[in-house]
Length: 253
Image 1 (cartoon, rainbow, N blue to C red):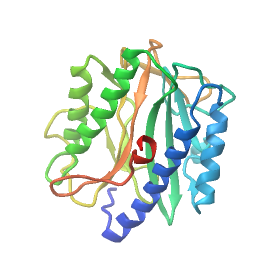
Image 2: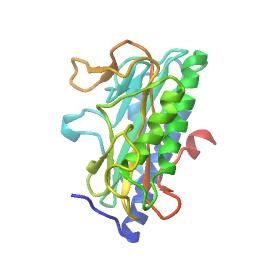
Image 3: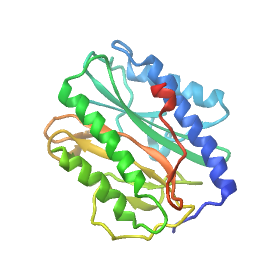
Image 4: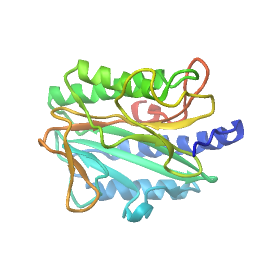
């Protein structure tokens, strides 16, 4: 079932997503060689709780942590650990919060120091693909127009799109209908209407699109061992131009 949000609900969701954005900003200050991913997770949990919210992922379907932290060839759902970041790593931090009864969700893939040029280009193109998809999230378009735009930009740059993992609706539940694939044919799927809130999150691989799940039951990795990037915004479908509720300004300022 699809839930279209009222303006009052969207205002509450903007607060949730602003907190997610600020949390990722706090994380960005700490990312450096030598810091463990578990330490990043603790920073995020403390910041979220200090701001009167709850970590959305902690305990969700049994997930053990506040952040999903995925490194290098890990695509999504990586579990924080004692692993210490190294120069040249890339690290995706996916963050969600529950505030005032509504969820926020966003992700960013960070460079740790200097990374290989081909990997840095992957990050650039994946973030561009996110915004290409968001451009299509306007009233009157179709759901698959979003995925088509993402897929077109990724494949134009000789990257591959993960098919099995998708974006989603979001609101009073972390995952709502509809699913938002990062690929597809134009003009297909749900006709978009004002007030639909979506988490759009391209996951783009440097190599082939094939993935598998590691033995921890969570972490998704590329089958060929090559790097993967992940960026995510929560947006509202609007007339003319989508409204972005999350943001990267606290990371990139």
